[in-house]
Length: 355
Image (cartoon, rainbow, N blue to C red):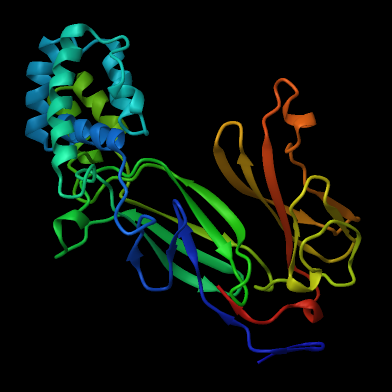
């Protein structure tokens, strides 16, 4: 039982983690899933993953045989191919769109493999998912005010073929949100997760060391971009008290706010909406969600704030009128700002079910 001044209640803490495109994970480990009723995979990503698998990842002997024959005999040993090899670890649709600086003979060889890969991607029983990664997010520790998570490109033992990872994950975003009593989700942090290998890939430190001992040529350099961990972990210390703070009575100069400070957060949804937190022992996050309508992109981020040394004013800024986005160089921007405090005096702690 928590007793903070006039606050009385039980604070129950569980964890909700969102990874990639809004895929939810509860306390039980489970794979991230695509939105909708079936997996959604990208054709170009499948093609590039397939090329990486065929040329580099299928096995040590396959790679060395390819390097000694096709790579050296078709002009792929030019500098431009080194760049292409590194691009295989990013979402590089450009790789399959144009030959660029490659010699035509080398590019014809790549096109031949690309044709095989296209058939594999098109004819797989889940279209374009033949080389899809299988990322898992697991909450390792969830405490009052802190959370630790692990992300890995794992192998599902004894599962159907479609759940067996055989591709690198590519870069992706990991988002951690806070939610009280099923209310508005508040972004606490975003992490840019690097490409992860699938377990059992043959390219390891030992494999590269062995390559340098046996050959010590460009074939060993080509392997280095594919030396990636299969998992990574993060720890976020997000609050000293582990809860939202009731800001009633400590805000002023309200202009168009769309929620009440007593809810633990204040939303500013229109251009020019603003309010001020008065000086005091308050600290938290400013969560910004943005839609760039001109470019068709979305983004969201958080910034930390505190009112320890003085009043602090928050204003939502967007460019959503013709007088703004018709100005050359301006993009049409729809932006929402949500401000919340997670540190403050004990009597202002909001108890409840936190996820």
